[in-house]
Length: 252
Image (cartoon, rainbow, N blue to C red):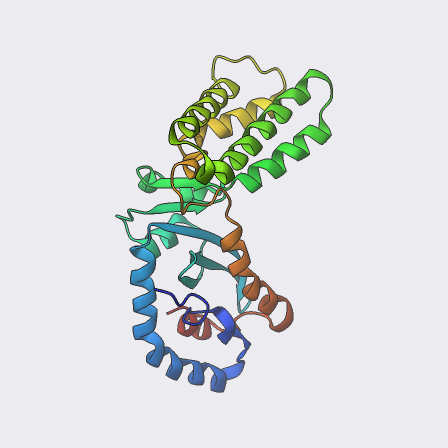
């Protein structure tokens, strides 16, 4: 389905203000509903989907603008919550693709425990860099080792097409082993920050290096973040939704 930007349901309707604007959007909402359903089905049937969310306003109440996207389709959803309920509503309980996201807890709900996932390495590298800058002495080695490992994995993915399959497999398995050693529960980490991060990586362990083995899978969630930017611009320049009715119309 090669129509991501041209046929995607965007939050741009938020620019219309007042009852007249909402009525106009309501008319378009009815006309576009079949396209929305087509996009929703495309998202649910995708082999890879990136997801992200950002703050939104519905009158004086807090809401959330969600995005679900890949290279072919982008779908937006305005919701009054930031829970895994939205993920399940959009992707369905039996999503068979790979969900790419940051480490926000909504993407790790127990109802999603059997899903295939990829955690964003950009977020992890950013956190590791901040850790390295704030630590001293031997404590800094954990962040340096973690950074080197994740960067090596990113480099291996770039080289994959040029490598003999056996060489790729050997190098990938070396990285897998090094990651296991870095975050092993039996490893004694005195620094509390390092210990917390190791536990975080251990919790996400199955979802850290999956990108190495799936050609179309990115190691980062940059795509979803880019697709959220139009909504962020609207939020800054025109506000969001001025009523629950407007939000309901746009998000339906």
